[in-house]
Image 1: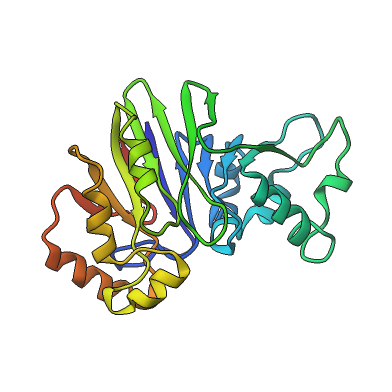
Image 2: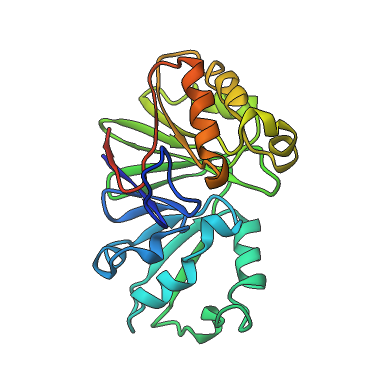
Amino acid sequence: MHLRVVDGCQTNVHHQANLISYVVDEHLAFDVGAIGLMPLAEQKKLDTIFLSHSHADHIATLPLLIDNVYAPGPDCITLYANQSTIDALREHVFNDRIWPNVFQLATPDSPFVKFKPLGHGDSILIAGKRVTAFDVNHTIPTLGFVVQDHQGGVAVVADTAPCDAIWEFLSTIENLKAVFLEISFPNSMQWLADVAKHLTPRDFVRETEKLKRPMAWYITHLKLEHAEAIAAEVAELGLKNFQFAMGGECYQF
């Protein structure tokens, strides 16, 4: 499988910008932070999207995407998310104040988007890929995802604080090859990471040690203001089998 990191503004630093999405084999995506900024031809290839949660950096371009790819007819993008995320989008985004209510505008024969609820442990089979959701530890209900095919699996953990349950769950995925895991703040801002339920480099190391088998690690979600400080702290750790997930890069698993 090919996993491409999509961000809002590619930079020359060791990270993505704050608007983050992941596209797998062109038709499947995780989060919509930057998807609506891709070339239109690439947006139109997408048919299924999984949303981790409703925070703005993960849904920012969803209204644009829906508007960009809509065409009259029965075909539309299917969005899988937990019920909390679906409710938040209905109430706070597609409400005729922030964005037109696409649910009311739709007809049975011509929907704008289809929302389908998904919870911990639920698994969806799509075009040879199996996507399984799992709960993480964030300030609102949030899902991580494992995407698998016959060659292996990749976990996109999404925003999280330290959480033993994540690694207990991922330890059951026998063909797991790689994990995309966040570091949002430097160690000097541990207090903020704790309150906002994100990870620091110190937390990151402790979390990776909980998955007790060799793994490729990809660091994501660095806050722009603190990216250089985080990169320096990570370098001091001397970690093996890790790299920063770069915006625009395509990784093969």
